[in-house]
Length: 349
Image (cartoon, rainbow, N blue to C red; front, side):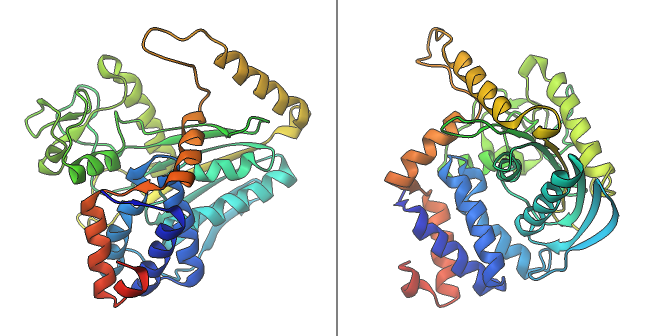
């Protein structure tokens, strides 16, 4: 399994996407978010996805250069149609637009629909946190194929339905919380499959509803379980609310349509801290709160307590210095794409 620098992966990502039809600006945005996920250790949302995105471009499920349209708007809300554009590009612009509204109106929200996969959610609320705002985002795959069984169910009926919050602070790394409402993101199952690894018990059931640790069963009629294990009704409840915010409120709907087109919908909300508290005071109190949590004596089997988001910050420092591991199966796909586009020599693949 090769270990590759972030800069080189960025170059590979941008070159392949542009060869597939993305503009220079689109490719740069996607690479920044995509390799950013690798840097913080979320390889399920990193370079492994680029071959899939290119496949979707080829069949018309992703439209490079798609227009970004506001369909409905008030001073504090926006409804955005991404017209099947790159989800990273569509949602990056939607978050910036919502941040600008929150600067004027103190709170703002947006829904986004008809866009491709938006990747790691944390990237977007962190934009607002850097502007002194609290932000949240939820995402759902609309009527795309489902991967998660309801609590007590034996068949998939929900998406992995992630949710994320980010908060401004004076900490060295950002404080945020980003989770799938399933026991694991579907991308983590794909990574385990590519690496020939098993997954932990409690993540999956097979097509017969029986527990399994074989990641391959997800593509064989199996399903992910909601987060929570024996208390999985909590994850199921969260997933239901995320689907309502990101699927029903956006107009994407629920269930599965026969086209198989991946269609991320999302709900964004941004809150200007200064409308509620002095920003500097708030950031310092969040910092002190995080340090208070970190000062907790560690339980057996742990060496320290981390604040939410700290593990990603630590991984990023390590991977910027030492490189990003890329599974052999993914590296081979990148090599094949580069060869097909005549870029193998240029990219050193």
